Length: 635
Image 1 (tube, rainbow, N blue to C red):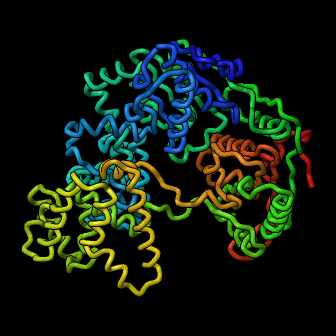
Image 2 (image 1 turned 90 degrees about the horizontal axis):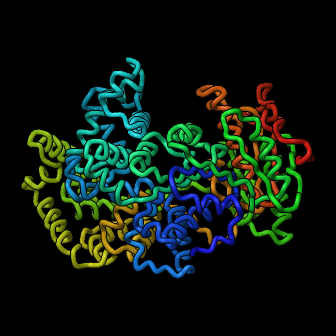
Image 3 (image 1 turned 30 degrees about the vertical axis):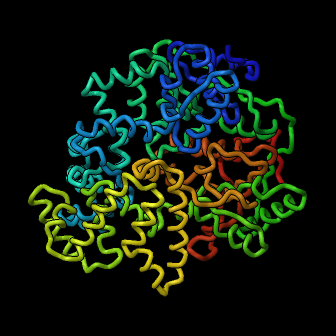
């Protein structure tokens, strides 16, 4: 029997309730990961299912890895041996759905080696289609068109569905004209995008009962973390997979639903009891992270929301310091105040890594960066250029993509003239015309050219493709970069940044050592946004509240607690009272990141358009008045 003595009463109930639908309402810091991993170990060790009969889903690669590692540790401690983690179905929505649909590629008209295009590739395709349709891409920007298409896919809507709905002459209407040609282009490129992964999976399930039945039978238990963040297609996907047996366990917190801007629907968790038959609703209320004053402040704040499920929220920790509120003259005064406190805390022995500044909007970081540079406080702004988004890395990956899939038109276009081979845009346009006329891929059309440089190029591609079967990924990458002339091109460059690019490519080769195959690597970088910032150095973290969800720090600073920053005016204008409630949830998330100390700061005036004027004077955020006076102190 699996030992549950380390769980509290509510956590244990969540683990032991195994039949039917279960909703675990896990308030901030109440141990939801412990419940999820313990539930996996409990089901397996008690013989209710095998480990590969559990589908456990979450949103980030980091969360999936933690869930997998902790579940394996608990199973090992209880004497259950798992020979290999390869058969486990614990991962992100996109990773698991991709694993399901890749063997079924013929059902959506792709080859087994189909490519997953990234955001840059998506914009290039949309821009090309807009040009063909005579659409002004200055007025109707590709990023805006991509936003609509991605949102429609998250809602499981096809081109035919949206054409009737879009308001004529609106940006949405223009995007609806692009949607179908965009999908046709993906088919011709033997590619799909991120939105397609789950949408295609749902469509296969709906129109292929044998496939759906296979997975419904395979997975005896479905579990999902952060259920409040699910969008329409994720909701449908989970429902279809669990509807045969009804054994679905959803863990989440409606008070932490802050991602509506990317399609998340808090309604999914609020209507759980209507979607599933006689569900068990278990509320985790004991917080293990924060002091009483922080918990009481957060609880008093969020109680003002009307669209939420009632739940208790408490801690056995000491009261600790009250939440400190300080009004400053302007943003630079605010930055000086906060950095001064940070310096004092460091001097008292608190590492910089235990301190975070949580901002509502990116523009707020400038004053803090300038001040920290001035006084010598090391810091990191989360959200710089990611490793796999750097130009040289994308070029190298394009070579690998074309080697693995000789019909990958986007990869071909990116690297056919890198290094320069005399293949310009005019040549590529001709290849595109031939490909469209003959119904073949752009690389296939280019292979028909008599250009000697192209003959050599494709000869290299074919040779590397053969060698991919015998060489380790890192050795193949090194060979391609040298033999293609890409390394020589950078070595001969006089630009200082090209020296850094060589270092990045060396790091890419090192990264490839961790993968068993090129395909595994390509799928990985398609699904994971790699954070290149080091966490080894001791430095203050500056990040948005949205990015801070799931993290915790000893001391948290929340600057800009003002109207027109939080709540954000755009949120109010677009969603009214619903927007205000989500902004309040953002405040709740920010406060509950703090373990011991939380500081709220606001300015009396704020710079707008480079000058102070009568309109620059600001008011405290309305949410400041939601925090009980008993757990707050004004400086």
